Length: 233
Image: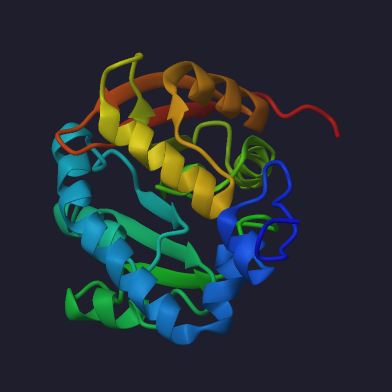
């Protein structure tokens, strides 16, 4: 017990769970006003990050882009606007994508984009040419991240591509921004930012081989993965 009479947090427990008794995702689901603030912040972050990703990587080679955990659809919107021949699928929890149709329709993309609700721990849409996850895996520890990756792998064909857009932690005494974010992820979600080697190990455990890591002019990098053969469960 601490001086306030509270039990000490458990090893690996997030500050949010210790304070509220539930994880951050459940807390926001139960507090729509907090969810709205969070969604707005994520959309704001995506504006510059989306353009930086498009400047660094050619998405036009893909016929169908599946944005996993894509929020209100800003990243997918920018990809589709830059790639007129590409269609998209936006996938996220029901309360998150509630207003995504307005974002996509206002850009004239309603006919080129399907919006699907669900949980990436259970299943994701099939038949995509590329599966994109921006700032998703840093919200989860390794075990949960591997579960998410394996869900994606089950939905993907052998020729599909995985694109993970995340911070890549630099060497000691370099790139402090990613390390401050690492502390934030640890406190809020009991999660973490990762080094290049940690991403390689993580994706391998999830069924992917990292083939390329492309830096962008934002703080995020594009980590490209190709599916490995599925092992019998």
